[in-house]
Image (cartoon, rainbow, N blue to C red; front, side):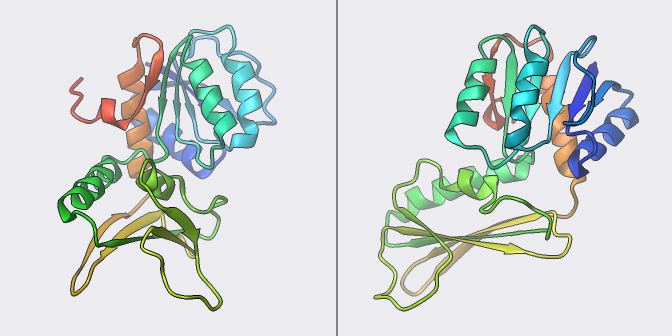
Length: 234
């Protein structure tokens, strides 16, 4: 497989390149916003760990090519979701805000727990990341809440009348070199349940992105995600 990396000089970009070379994957393009390379010649899958603001350049690179795309960029707005949808009409596009299989399982467990508990439990999310993380809350925290009813409250301060039952509270902690930790607290009367995923290093995300690249290689156009990857055996 021959890949390109967009956002090559970032933390994740450098890790993807390192792990790709360790797996004898050919890295034909290493691109940043200030890189003059204008084509993806020979690239079968482009791996993107950049920023939403760089996606104009990303779209220009993809245009007119058959390269598949794997993206783990977070902080997407609705217009970026539309861009993913548009690109997926011409190529296989894999998107996940977190490339960890464990986080995917956490998401499923949260939904199963909420269904089994049957109401009466308040949900609060605490996410912890390194001091350099640009977006808050994390893309993973947003994914954990996706499709769930309730008003989102991002941190709390001041004086109020307590916590309405329909709230989902989200709390972002930033500091040190924490790769990523997500805690989902389900708090009831007389008991509470806490589901947690902690990454001990960023390597797991780079390996997940490469696994996703192998997955989309040769796939028909469409938008794919972790639910398609989990259980896939090459």
